[in-house]
Amino acid sequence: MRPQLEPHDEFNQQLEASVHPTDWQNPTPSGRYHLVVIGAGTAGLVTAAGAAKLGAKVALIERDLMGGDCLNTGCVPSKGIISAARAAAFVRNATEFGIHVPDGVNLDFAKVMRRMRKLRSRIALNDSASRFRDLGVDVFLGPGKFTASDTVQAGDTTLKFRKAVVCTGTRASVPPVPGIADVPYLTNQTVFSLTELPRRFGIIGAGPVGCELAQSFAGFGSEVFLVETTHGILPREDRDAAAIVKKSILNDGVNLLCCSRKTQLHQDGNRIRLAVQSHDTAYNESVDALLVAAGRTPNTDGLGLETVGVNFGRNGVQVNDQLQTTNPAIYAAGDICSKHKFTHSAEFLARTVIGNTLFLGRGRATSLLIPWTTYTTPEIAHVGLSPGEAAEQNIPIDTYTLEFSDVDRAILDSEEDGFVRVHTARGKDKILGATIVAGNAGNMISEITLAMNNRIGLGKIANSIHPYPTQAEAIRRVGDMYNRTRLTPFVKSLIEKWLSWTR
Image 1 (spheres, rainbow, N blue to C red):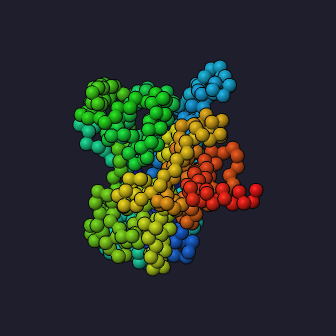
Image 2 (image 1 turned 120 degrees about the vertical axis):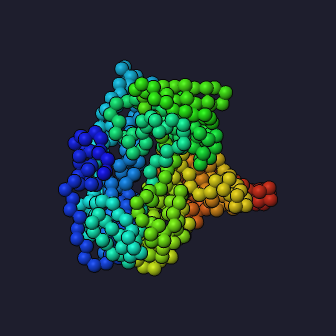
Image 3 (image 1 turned 45 degrees about the vertical axis):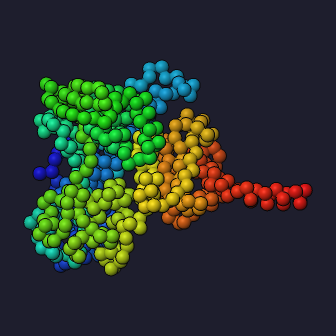
């Protein structure tokens, strides 16, 4: 049974009416489908809509909520509460700007979450079952399972297909922490159902989800204990970038229990006892709620993949570079088969799979340049190679870094903690990767992504006039840094001779 949306208020009822209406009648199929898509998260929705708009006969199967994690338990609700936490932080820090708020921050957590649910229900219309039906997609609500190499069982209905696409995504992993089976805990699937603010909040996992929500709940007033199980928060990010976010998180009052060892959980009345050995300090904290944000597990159970020759494992469904599984008639897209578990990555993998399934295309997943953003304060945005990845591939690089403490707009905004860092091929202006740490880094990284996709070198970015004062001007100034390296002593001597002749 699909879990009940909580709380069952008007906005969650509107959400349910859009993405899993209780009175939905599955259609009666007629003939073979060009595509049967299992899973209506981002990858599944884009695949189904794109194929249907091209005239293909498409069936879309979803056992839970259309929109998947992104709409229901990921990007949309998390950014809804992050925006509220940032608003609260701005009010707290208003005195720095000469603004006095007499009563300070009087935060109503129930209203914060109500606002999030209201906005989520509004956005849900884009992913609704009725919208996709109107696009010409046959929408089946219920479980889907392969029964043969050309058939899928959707509830009591058998669907025949020419090609099928698995887009079932992932769910939160449960780490092997002693005692975790004996205590109630939240994941991203349940944390957005909270209506009361936990006074003391424990979070296991210091990746993007853990750090974003730790900072947000601390901003709401919770005493947060963030348990980091590896050495350093945000392990996928530039270490200097992660250090800036760590400083910010600590300044916001989060208790960071890093390099945790011997973590144990116990029920303690209505609370949860969190015992952690962090460096040389033993912590034994009682928390009102516990969030587990320690990785993702692929949703492969119940699909019948083993009966149709589709290989899968702990990392999801196995695909080649064209997103084809070990069964030539079955493809996969999105988090279920990609190391980049982002909504925008799922969308572009879906675009690739449409061409490869319907038109014998040869689009390659590895040809996609995938940027990403961690929505802490400040944000971290990254695209392309990191120095470590460049070293592993024996690619020599040059690195150019401009601190925001040297950028006028960042100084005026009191957002000096951050930088723009660009990596180029050694001795050239070809951009291989970049990291930006800034309040709006997620918006800024697209300029560099565009340049990389279109082979625009760092030197040419320097020739693009940016409005002053903006934080994005820092990107142009990094281009200036590259151009100054071209002024070698020999070139400088030629310029000096020329100027002396023309004096």
